[in-house]
Amino acid sequence: MNFHKDNLEALQKFQQMLNAEPDPLGVESTPDKKAQTLVISHVETTLDELFFGHWRTENFKWAVLANEVQASMELVVIHPISGYELKRTGAASVIIMVDKVPDNVVGSDRNRWALNPDNKKANAMDLAFGKLKAECLKNAALSLGKVFGRDLNRKNKDTYKPFKLKGALGRGHEQDVAYVRELIQQATDITQLHKIFKACSPEVLAEVGDELNNKKQQFGISE
View (cartoon, rainbow, N blue to C red):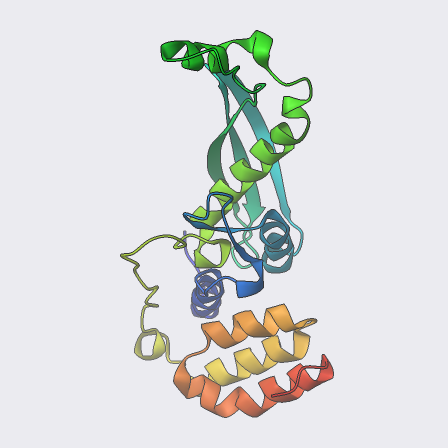
């Protein structure tokens, strides 16, 4: 796979956007309050934004195991710089909800009650199956980068470090600034500006900060 030097820089810029922190507005606590998750709406919208709508899911497969439904699904995206098709597999499971265990059922019989399909709630999978597909999509997307929640709930986190292309490719700071200015001009909402801000180096941000603020004001956001 050979790329022109301009494409290599564009690839790195795109990777920086993929490895920006997720939009905090899309992060919620899980129902048990023990972890954080990126809600499906923000995952799907970010896929739309970064891949210009060129993504799809396929090969959704599921199976029942005891009182759980386990599934896997492939997320397919078209890389906007290379044009290559990328696939990521996501997996998840949901518990099949059953009726409340009667008070007179005790010990190991309570577990057998939960595993008995005759005790399944009538509409147990009405919402749960859609959730299962959403969780598979989220699990697949997070492997693309931090912006999809890759490092949520991790204590030991690595940071994306772009290869220094300035000397190797003969391009430098001025081209970086020009590229970011173009992204700012093309931004259509505050979420995109947030991602651009996160991807900027301090040196570039020092030059484009005023333009970022002016663009925010166009969206009705003031400092």
